[in-house]
Image (cartoon, rainbow, N blue to C red; front, side, top):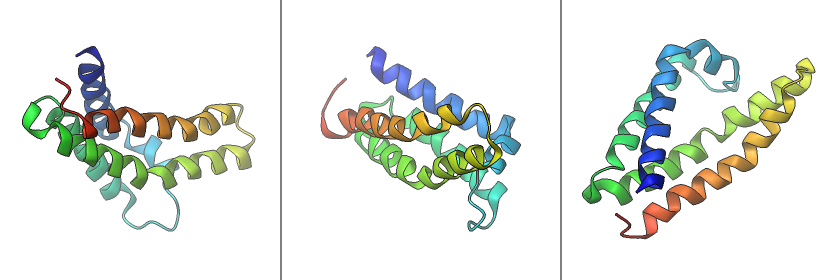
Amino acid sequence: MFSLYSMAAFYVLAGVNHFANPDFYKKIMPPWLPWHYSLIFISGVAEIVLGLLLLPVQTRKLAACGIIVLLVAILPANVQMMLNYQQQKNPYLWIAVVRLPLQLLFIGWAYQFAKSDRK
C-alpha cells in the first residue's frame, strides 16, 4: 500500500508543480514542440488525474498504463534538459543525466500496478 500511495502522491504533486512552476518546464521543452505552456499544463493535469486514478482498484491498471505512456511522452523534455545543461556547462548536469535512467525505474514502478491486481 505504501508504494501505491507514494506513487499517487508523487504524480499529484508533480502535476501541481507544473502549475506552480511552469517556467521551469518551459526551459526544458524541446524547441521543435509547439505550444509549450499548453503542453506543460496538459501534462500537469494528466499527472494529477492519473495519480488520483491509481487509488481506486477499478481504475488502477488504466492509470498505471497512462503513467507509462506519459513517461514515454515526456522523455524528450528530459533529454532536452540534459542537452541544455551540457551546453550551459551547468554543474547540475549530473542530475539531468541521472534522470534519464530514472524514467525506466518509474516505468517499471508503474508497470507493477499495470500488470497485477495489487491492492
